[in-house]
Image (cartoon, rainbow, N blue to C red):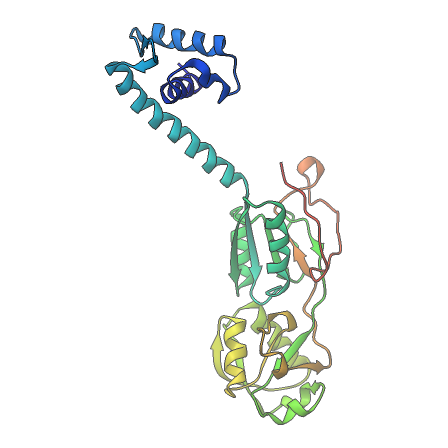
Length: 294
């Protein structure tokens, strides 16, 4: 027996005739033969031949109930498998491409409507590394070089950092803010050992600044909101400033860039003896084209 034979039997029961063959795009003699083969294999008569057409017998009706359940289950399994084949898992370092990534993923889903996207946003680079080692993400977006041999890195863009100030802050009158002018400001900082906080520590050290952390948060959006309410100043990637808060953000001088941002699928180069060396520059502010992965 096969699912195809089950589908034939269900179609005949629905139409009351082997003319149901047209629904399944097969020849009527072929469908008739398949129904006879099925009855022979089961050792029962599924349909009574009457002047008005084919009518399921009592045994036939019982069989058809189970056949319908089997066909429905097979279709669900097929749909589930196909949905799984079109899943994209993205691991992103907190604050990176919060504006650009939705547009890029939207373009991808427009081309592949069945695509399901899962995004892990992590403040801790070590956690991203653990996810990558477990093979969880299809790609990761991080600030900084990726030295692991598992990765194939692609430089996407260099994004400036901006300082976010509270409404009415005196520095909002300037087009840019010099870091030395933030010497005595309270700071909204990020979790200890997070990539953003380590970067801020480096910026403060390089500019010989001290800081007083009035709060520590895990999300860039939270840092921006709290800075906007005057709790303190914060430093975030320009792309991480939520819409509606741009007027509170100012470029800083000296200019602060993160290290190079990478797209890092866990995929080795030819022969499996090291990373593939292809590096492609791409700015996610610009349209991009995508190809399905077999």
